Image (cartoon, rainbow, N blue to C red):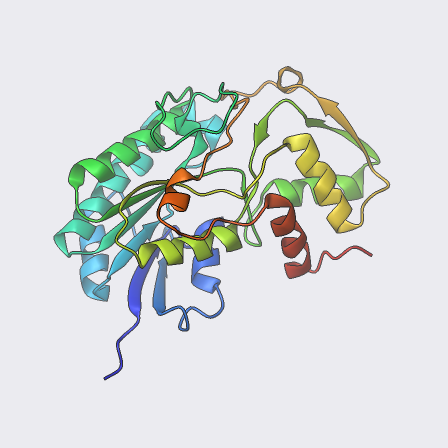
Length: 292
C-alpha cells in the first residue's frame, strides 16, 4: 500500500519564501505535496477562510509565510502589521489545531534588540525595537498560546529567485553606477530561500516542536555581502564605499547585530543551512549569474 504524500498548505505563496517552497523541485521525492495560497486565495485575517482552507485540503501541515514585511511602513501602519502578523497567525494556528495539522510559523531576527555581540540563542530574551518586530513576536506568542503542533522558525536577511531583495538591488545598482555606498556596521547572516525551504520541509516531517533559528551559516556585514554579490555576478569594476547606519536613517531601527545561533537545529540532529557564501555562489548559478 502506497503512503500518500504529506499535504502542506503554504500561506504567502506569492512571496519570496512561499513561492520557493511551492516551486521547489523534487517535492514528491521528499514525500510532500504543496498547495500554495497567495493573498487573493486565503485571507489570513479571516478565521473562517483559514478553517475552510485547512479542512478542504485535509492538510497535514501549514507553513505560514504570509506576513506584513514592510519594516519601515509598519512604523506608521501598526494596525495592519498586527492584524496580519499577530491576528492572522492566531487564525492559522486555531485552524491548524482544530484539524490536527502541524504549524510552522516563520518569524524573524527583529524579535531581538539587535545589540548583542554573540549569536542569539533560541532561549534569549526577546526585546523588539520596531513595530514589525513586535508584531512578529506577538505572532509567535499567539501560535504557542493556541497550542497544538507548533514550530517557530526565526530567520534573517532572506533573498531568493522570487521578488525583490538585497541581491537584486545590488546587482541593479552595479549596472547603473560605478560607485555607491553600503552599510558596514550591521552584522547578520544572509539566508537563501532555497536552503531555508529545504530545511522547513525537513523540519515539518519531524515532531520536534518548538523554536528554531534557521539562517545561512556564518555572518557578514551588508557591505561584505554586497562585495560577494558583485564578485559572483562578475561586476568587479564597481567601487563599494562602506558607510554607517547613521548615514542612511530609516523610519524603523535596524539591528546592529542579528546573527542567530542554530543550537536547536544541532540538538535535534537536523541539517544546518550551508554557509552563506556557498549559498550565494549557488544562487548566482541558479539565476544565471555565473561569473563571466
